[in-house]
Image 1 (spheres, one colour):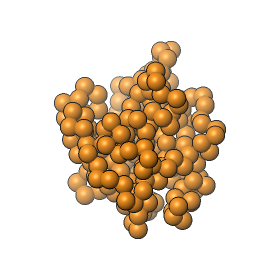
Image 2 (spheres, rainbow, N blue to C red):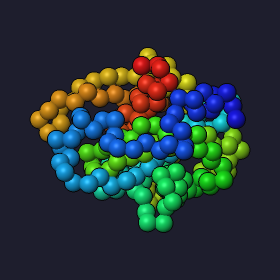
Image 3 (cartoon, rainbow, N blue to C red):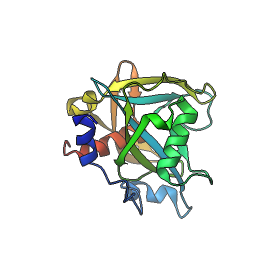
Length: 201
């Protein structure tokens, strides 16, 4: 494992202790979510373990009912046959972009995150083998797969903070802009959580 992946692992919640309880942003959106139970979901924050260490993203298909066209980590809702959140992240990633779980080494978790669409998301951070087979995005869900150097996110000069109005209330947001891609919303918030756990913000 590269030194970068080892450094990431040191900043994460251990695999043996998956995050429990409300997401780290719960207080910010609790009044919008109400008392409805949140659906468990997981995403894979995958870092290709090569010379540059690239983070893998998808751009969701424009015709999807939720988050159409947005940049996201591969992942989705937990299904009955999934053993745990790591299993969910690996299954969804293989379904969405054709990355076999044999090429993925889970490192640990970021803090849980709640979405306005009603999910409690567990981000699974993992290293991806440098010689993993070519990615094969599922055209029904994924319009594009692209990679961004991890170093781009570790340089906090590339982090943009802004405020937006949602349902009549101001919300503090973060985003990244890379090569024509806007990385914002839940995906940017999870990256911000990674930076925070690494002591960079």
